[in-house]
Length: 354
Image (cartoon, rainbow, N blue to C red):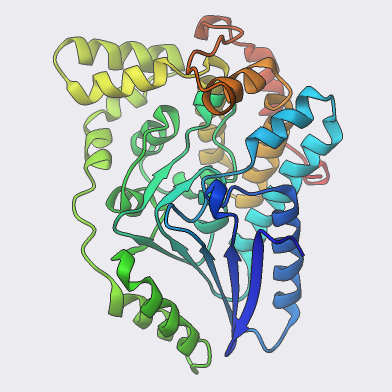
């Protein structure tokens, strides 16, 4: 077993603990493989009635996948290893989504990218009041993956696109408004909630007991300000393409709308290919409306995006050299390879999943 993920059983509750706190529990290939194997074992184990997913460390549940390691694989030309990483991660996301026993994810602190993937697909998602959610992939030349579109197609398109395209960080109230969490609790209540969930694992009516445990610790998350802003900007996000969306946000910002101006600034600084890929894949997901189909699309896109120069350059600029000055190729939305993206975003057959 990988030392960065721990597994335990208490009563009838299986507990997955991400234990790479020095990297905010960023997911390695080995961690993902161990989670997959253990969940498959627990799925068949009659002694396990439910599962809790949690993370060690003060900073958060999970900051995402280990994109530095993936970048190194891509730069070394290890194409199959790159594809295998994403195939396993998305298989894990799909298993969590379809798991026949209740999974409860405890979302504390930073919950970003792959952190959303490993938690928000669970049957029950409990965020701490100080949790911070984001899909910042556009800043590193990638796209919003991990099946997040299977969650966000259920909310308003303006909310979903504002969150995905901007990469902006939102709190617990907005995570609930987006459908990434169900309830919020104070950080100090996590320990008692965990104890209540373990006690619930041996209850006769398991789902009722889990819901009661969560409700006993739940607190008011406050106002979902980001969602409210996105709702007011719905006409902008109804535009047919990325250029038109950005133009509308820019014009609204020039007319004195600070929220539109902030969203414009965030999106305009992202990789152009990432912006287009994220927009098109989300709109496709609204037609697919099936988590496994959406994850197959994600895998096809990931295999293409991770091998493009923009991914290596984006990770360099944000996480390696940290100069925050990426040079995108192409650097204009008008020059993005729409033909290549359209081919990738055609319906992906089930046998292409791996």
